[in-house]
Length: 118
Picture 1 (cartoon, rainbow, N blue to C red):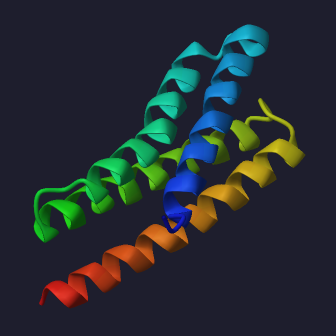
Picture 2 (cartoon, rainbow, N blue to C red):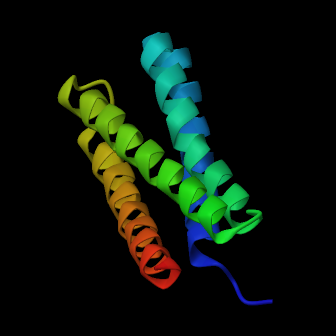
């Protein structure tokens, strides 16, 4: 079976977000932000998985669109954590690079799926 790069990237990213959540709760007591980024950061992969199992092309596009929006939200929270100096620059830049790659892939999937649906 052919590897699906977006599923791999979103799964690996979700694992990193779970670890970030644990670190935020354990060492910084940033429970509210930790909860927000955990929800949005893990939702990306979950919605991508749902899209692949979608009932129709319209359902697929809808779920990919949700995954894209959750990725945008996650990027926001990462920028907040970086700007507030809650996480170090190296970690922030690494996570932001990952989310940019995910956004680029999801954006291309969404555009190509929408065009082929027309």
